[in-house]
Length: 383
Ligand code: 0WD
Ligand code: CA
Image (cartoon, rainbow, N blue to C red; front, side, top):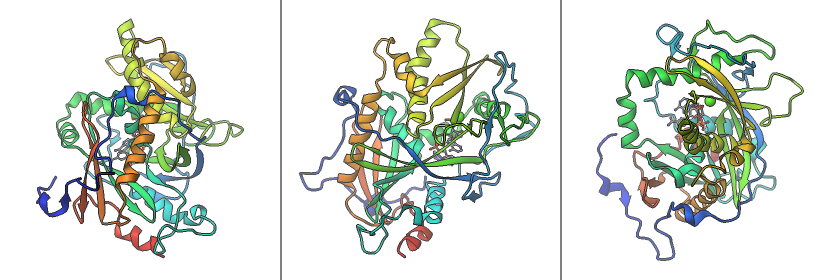
């Protein structure tokens, strides 16, 4: 990250005394009734092609093909010679979502147009972000390894939220082992074995795995008093055209190490199922299909987890995570962000920061390296 003079654009968060300066992430504080979470509604979708170009359509949507009970998929196949990896040093922020919004403004704008600011149109939502950023918020009370940085900007009454890579995450990304690099490929290879490009087509295991390609759903929902619009990458949908409408027809694919001991099962429940549940619950994706693989990358079994049943499944685990804690923390963080991010200005970023065993804190930045709303978006929104 470029070194810069922090005194020039940072004001410490010593505002009016009524404004909370930090937010605790202690689990016990969030053990109350489950907050209102409205059924997520798909309002659109978009695709990113093999060169990461945006299309306002479903061209990259794939169809699930049920594997055999013991598939023997070799996830290592093609890693050396049929893998095009997305350049993850390129930070796209929320640009693709902003492109989708501009292309679909008429669908969103509030009839009557009671805009918060006369200069910008009212999108009728309080937050716009990636689903993955919300997943991080949901899992925060249980996270002990990785912190996060979330940049928030208010424009036209809506809060835009985009992640900033932490120093630790950048170090991890730049020092990944060869083994880790290869294992990151395994998840995408599993997708290739279980997805077809056409409703009743066949998977093409001989093809190239290109991780630039993506199909993303855009959903609208409400968490307590917060109207949310977010986008998430979807792996595939049920092939049957009579299946339920999106997002209920979507399927999330995962790979995980095969379970050989009770301790391994316990770890799957405590850590992985929390992340899988949070990620799929948010957009209303009902099924997570997991391929369990051995240490040589061979898928030895496939199991379906129904998102709505995951909380029941983990209840027997001692001292396990609770969905209500995840949702209440997220809701309280969003309230905190709205109370802090008052100034409606695309050049101002409120940077929320959290490290394990700490409270969430923030700093304010004007015209800094953290600004993330592009000029083309701000200009277009002013019309
Ligand atoms: O640049 C960044 N820091 C980020 C970019 C962070 C988070 C997301 N993204 C973008 C990517 O463009 C990606 O296309 O968001 C898209 C996915 O958004 P999401 O659904 O909100 O992210 P998340 O729920 O964390 O991940 C969903 C899937 C992952 O599947 P698994 O089963 O591993 O959870 O999106 C993929 C991955 O397949 N994915 C990414 N693909 C490319 N670049 C990235 C990424 N940085 N992160 C997740
Ligand atoms: Ca996946």
